[in-house]
Amino acid sequence: MTMTEQEQAAARMLELSRRTQMGDRETVIPEPFPAEIAPGVFWLGSCLRGNSPKGEVHTGVWTYLVIGTDKTLMYETGLPQSWEILEPVIEQVLGGRALDYIVPSHPEYPHSGNLPNLLDKYPGAVAIGDMRDYPLHYPDYADRMVETPAGEVVDLGGGYQVRLLEAVLRDMTNTVWAYEISQQVLFVSDGFAYLHRPDYVITGEEDLDVDQHLPGQCGLISGVGDTFPSLEDILHYCSMAFYWSRYRDDSDRNFDRLQDLLAENPTRILAPSHGNVTLDLDRVVPLAREAHRKAYIRTPVEAKASA
Amino acid sequence: MSDTPYELVEGRIYALTGSIPLDGTASWAPVEEGRSQSLTCWLLKEGDQHMVVDTGVRALWPHISAQLATIVPPGSSLKIFMTRPEPDAVGNLAVIREVYSMEDTDVLAGGNDTPFDFFETAASSRGSRKSSGATPGVLRTTGFDLSPDRPIRVIVPKLRFLPSYWPYDITTKTLFTSDVFTHVSQKTGDPLPIVESPEPPDADEVARHLFSKFWWLPGATTREFVDDLRGIFDRLQPEIVAPAYGGVLKGRAVIEAHLETMLEVLEGSERGDYGQPAVLDAAYVR
Ligand SMILES: [Zn+2]
Ligand SMILES: [Zn+2]
Ligand SMILES: [Zn+2]
Ligand SMILES: [Zn+2]
Image (cartoon, rainbow over the protein chains, first blue to last red):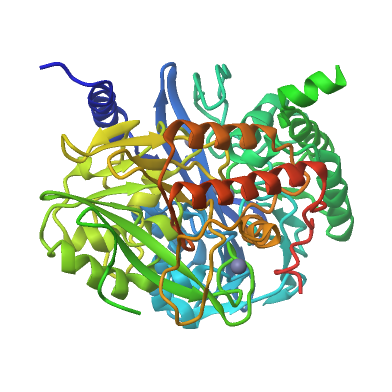
């Protein structure tokens, strides 16, 4: 009996899935975590490990804690499959205190998936931000979601204040950014994302052929004078994860808006949810503008028309 | 909402469906006074084999589970195909795994495991108070047979938001378009709309629904989407279009009419007929 093309494909996929997904999809906490990136502001989270033909790939999925004198706030909820290893790190940073506010940046699982775990663990906590969709996804917790418009400031005490902001770079429309006023940290969710230290060979539209994780990049802050992230780092992630960026020639429009936002919210530390924490905004912001510009792929029709 | 599933194709496809008001609750749909949107996961049946396309939003689980149980008794084996790694598609996976008998290879999706698609993450989310413990694997597939007489092919549409895969049921000629073709809403209280009349839909209505989720389409370069959609529909000649949100399109003439309007809207997007998306999201910054 000969297998149909589909059966062969299914069998191939079955084999592949056993090999690469069931055994190897581990998550790990980067060695420097929890990292205090500014007094009272902590960087934590986990790396989702995968394999490529050339070796290990890491996708960072980060979360941040802001510890005020009266209240505490968590931006992002971390990978749901990392909950068991994240929980003790969250406890460590909170130092016996409760969590008061949770800001999931948007409903995708890497960003909001631990909402039930967090709300269970901290019965006094509420989720705030653009809360559309969440009551449909987490109906048991609907009474603990507080619609909080952009511009609103949450006072955590001791000078710590978090302002919710609209997301200039985003996938889902109800994405929320946030800004800690005293330490000047901007939390940008899917913006400024990159895999840590891959090599790139993009062979086709959806193909991610080579990603090589280099040791020591997990949880490493990109400081002034550092050479990562590179243009390729940001371009690669942006064109893969922000699918729209291939179809929109609007980098300048978005980054002009980002400059306005940075003027209103002077930023020392850029805190993305997938890319590493970045201190050198003067280098990285123009780089990201260029990356978004390059992500745009003009259709053959257009290219011909302008040739 | 009824606890009897709507039988879309006799003995073969059932709608496990409920609805939400178009009152701004969902970010993916426009606000329309007095109207609602059906949210549906699709149950495919072939003999003793069953598969659901998506699992629906968690808030509708009481309806979905009751409808599902009338066809597939709890404890039976069941496969799940996820069209997208999003909570509205995957939200009931954890509870279904608790109620039905599922092997690791019974959770399927299209594509490949890349650092960008998070299907595994979606499949591991518990979504309920009770933790399900083990993280299920996700079998990636380009097509499979529900039974020897029921081949399913996985279509990879270019028009997508997050990674999206559309199952195509060859036997019934049904295309499951997930978060595209979502523009048929209903008067609140009405059941899942089944469109069988071939008059074209209102283009503005199509645009409003499409752009609610695909906020980035106005002003985008859309030629590839137009060509790709036309190619998919020319090749498959589907007789039913069954989305995850909104009503069903039934019949070649109906599907052609809605496809043409969809393509017009996409072409209009590129021409600038719909302007540019608001950088400030009007629904959030209010
Ligand atoms: Zn996202
Ligand atoms: Zn993300
Ligand atoms: Zn890592
Ligand atoms: Zn409508």
